[in-house]
Amino acid sequence: MTMNPTRRRHDEQQIARLDRPVALSPLFRMGEGKEVKYRTQFTYDGDPVEIEITSRTTLGATEQDVLLAIEQIASTKGFRLETGGKIAIETTAAAILRALNDKHEGGREFGRVKEAVEKLASVTVKVEKKQSSGRYKPVCIDNLISLIGDQDGKLVIRIHPVFGHIIRGGSGYIQIDLKERMRLDSTGRILHAVVCSTVNRGSTGRMLIGSLCQRTWGDPRPLARRKEALNHFFDEIEKMGWTATVERPEGRKASSGDPVVFVRPAAKPVKSPSGLPARRLRPTTQPINNAVPDEIDIENEPCPF
Image (tube, rainbow, N blue to C red; front, side, top):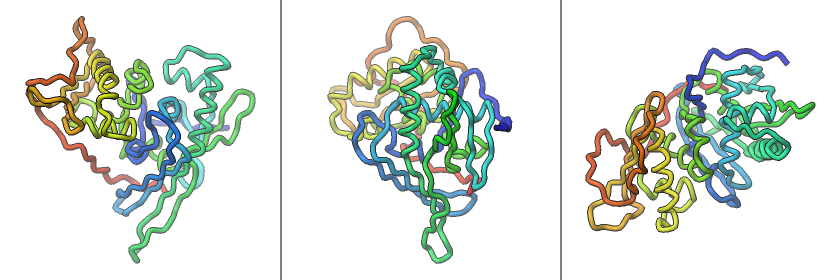
């Protein structure tokens, strides 16, 4: 297979990119078992487009890890451009683990990667364009990724155009620092991706606790069961240079309607001072600046179809 090198280079932070419709969908959550059928509308190059993501079950942090690693490998090692905007890469389970800074290479880890690839390959993505009649017409129906070869330890993976276009230089994506991500546990990795989909690098963003719980566990309500996981996540990302502050009046218990203000570092994270930060689900009087709304507008981008 002849591979074409990509023009983009990652910085030392190992930034991977994830398409916004995929990132904002309920595809990756803690706990499997629920069917996913997510539809969203946005604009490609001035054309109204509707995307439908379907999966027999929600996927977890491991599948999200592998999808991000596939994107990083394609962006740094090269890919083959196919008809219809699809791209294909040739890689190995070992290379995927290396992209995630996972030094545990062996039969068990390789099997875990291949299982994740197979689960990702079961996800269907349908893209429809709006016609002059006002109806949407399907222009692309395929799996998010397809495993088209598995010989001699090599994986040949084809990637759906809606995800592949960001690898080819398109816009409309979120950025995830893999070095940050892989320092977290599985719950923390899902939370990290959720927050990164709202807060750009070097900026401030605001999310409700209920929204964090909804997008991570699929339910905004059982806050008492999530408090320990949220506090642990806030503590861990502060060690990486973030800040996370819950806006809550003194004397009132935490609720799903409390906003969390995140400040995301722009450059290489600065090591935090010694000692753990205070639990963020306690009241705070820290001033909040440059808060942004929870909703995100997906920007216009060149149509890959």
